[in-house]
Length: 475
Image 1 (cartoon, rainbow, N blue to C red):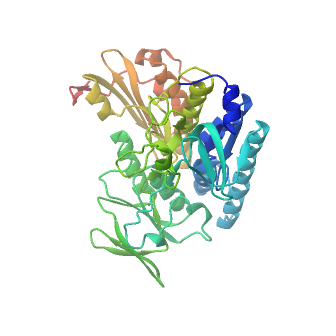
Image 2 (image 1 turned 90 degrees about the horizontal axis):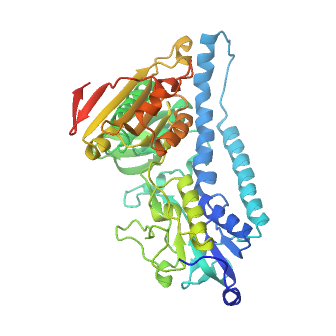
Image 3 (image 1 turned 180 degrees about the horizontal axis):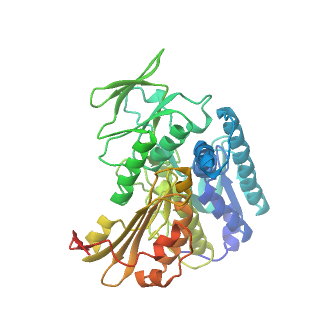
């Protein structure tokens, strides 16, 4: 690993010390901070600065989640003495407000790069060799000592399915010309679940279909089960162990043929069946950069995010390690430490807190009960299910779930899973404690804040049940 400043020879040999391909969260962070260090940096982005998260991912999704929550707020207000008049929803007004906000954020990203003297190329970029990049918009070629690939991921459009061209993905969903009356969403991950909630609470007849047996299959089973029940109770139609076979366009809408033979007609079909590394047409083979053999197209990197070519690195979703925006940013920071600060630093992918902005929200960090049972011989499971205080006067029956998984031999907390209002906020703070190696005794010694839902995390003093050698036994 090379560090320090580019030598005088290198300054003469290359146009830039660093060339970043991709203007998402990871690429912008690396480019901006490298430029602030005095490095000669360029960044190429062919679409809009900000990448998936800002333009067509986390940020607009959260805004749409907020929009979808207002019907419940209006209804709940009655239980607290408020009289709410007639309400209506304007989809196009939401789309326009979203667009204004992401345009503002895009401007901030660009301003930050400009402030660090980063040369921005509004073009697709591809590798010609290990040090040469071609800007496809103009054909111009430039050279760089180091190259960072941060092109993110793309929605899986399932192009082998007949009629896939009539379906939308998370790329198009934010800018539909009108709110559909009905939608079928295929997928069982967080994107599918979140948009099923968004559309349903905006008044769209929503069907969620998933080929597996349970939604969010990588999450703790209690969370998956509670989510399934919550979706059904709210009115979302959920079909499991089934999938879409083909889609046909008709005057009535989209005819969807399912694997089980059923045919249904809806206004829109959304595919939320995962994301693939955005590595096509980057000239990787010309530069000798290796990708995985699974066919997904992930760029192979070592523990320091370095490819098999010494001066070419890759971070974020294009490496298919952990597909989360904060992870891409963290990997970029580690890249800077490694390459320009002579401090080899590998990204830490352990104990990453994550949230699903469903209704209710999900927050989780660490191991599920099943995963922990495969790793630890003796577990203590602390589990609580209760109605949040706000729901009492509102008359809602929605329940909050909290679960703590503990290695009984060391008392270390190895997993925390929350499903309920503001779970995303709670799990961020709980994640600090779990990351630090907190024990259940540390949780028990922490004074509760009353009345809050979060106090349940520090007041479950006795295990609900035990797990011994993978088998549940009573406490």
